[in-house]
Structures are given as C-alpha cells and as structure tokens.
Image (cartoon, rainbow, N blue to C red; front, side, top):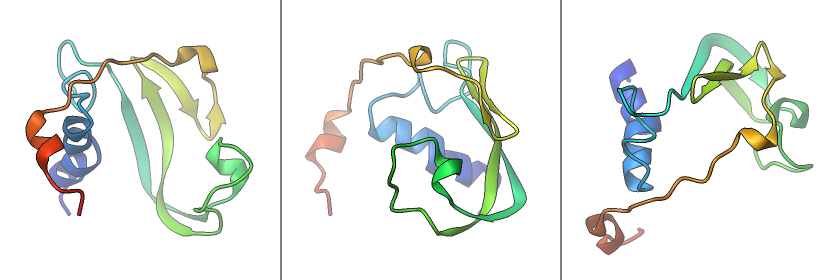
Length: 108
C-alpha cells in the first residue's frame, strides 16, 4: 500500500465518514495539526503498559509491525519516545457533520 493510500484509509477517509473532515484528516491551512509519526521498523507485542487505556484491551498480546514514536495534537507534542506528555484537558469536543449519503448506506 502506498503512503498516500495509507493516509487516505487511516486519516482522510475515516475523518470524512465520521463527519470530522476537514478539521481532522487533512494537513492543510485551517485543519488541526494532528500528525502521528510511525517507525515501520519497530516490531513488538502489544502490552497494556503501551496502550495508555483502561485495564483491558482486546489487542493485548497482538504482534504488530510499526509503532508510533511521536504524536502531535493541534501542533502540541503529546507522545514522544513512548512517553505520554499530554493531559486529559488537552482534548476538545468537535462538532460533527456527517454527509447524509454516508448515513443512508447500509452498515454491512
């Protein structure tokens, strides 16, 4: 998969389906500067300590290739070298506007 296709699948198209585009899912003037830098050479088994979530994840124990090394939210570094730097107050509620054509489509 090309980098362009990967970006479309994981960012642009997801943001469009969820009604968050162009605020999210784009690198453009007026969009949030949300960027994740992934090192494709990192191979690891997911552990709860890596996931920054509650006490359970269905992904625990999965083998993955590629790992985020830096996460930037609205231009602020939130994760660097595996260390969570952000705080819960960094989040923001974003109003969504889902395209009616998406809502009319069957889920499966």
